[in-house]
Length: 104
Ligand SMILES: [Zn+2]
Image 1 (cartoon, rainbow, N blue to C red):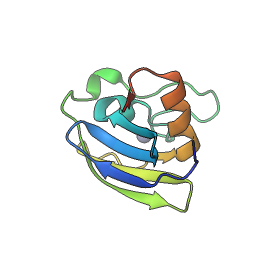
Image 2 (cartoon, protein in one colour; image 1 turned 30 degrees about the horizontal axis):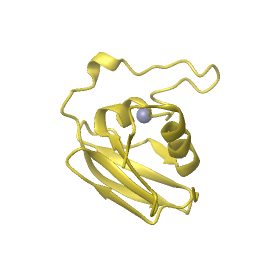
Image 3 (spheres, rainbow, N blue to C red; image 1 turned 90 degrees about the vertical axis):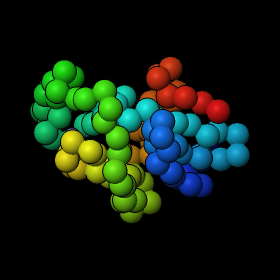
Image 4 (cartoon, rainbow, N blue to C red; image 1 turned 45 degrees about the vertical axis):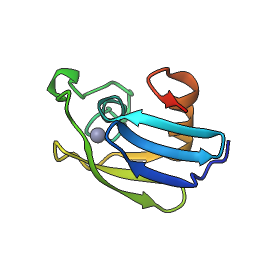
């Protein structure tokens, strides 16, 4: 799989990333929100999760995203959170390790 997606779209199910023709992955919104690794969600020194899972609504969606350089996306969530940067290699790691990611 390439490290740079061919396209990224917000769908009704989650953020869809076309890594290449064989790998179209959908990252469900709530799942991806919970994987946020920004300083507000994960303690930098210890890696301890600060985000309280129960504060995240089931119907949370991504409102928008921007590409950060050629290595990541930054997502604006419907709960107003927008400091999370998701590097592409992190998203690939989630795809490889987590059944929550929908693989088409
Ligand atoms: Zn965060």
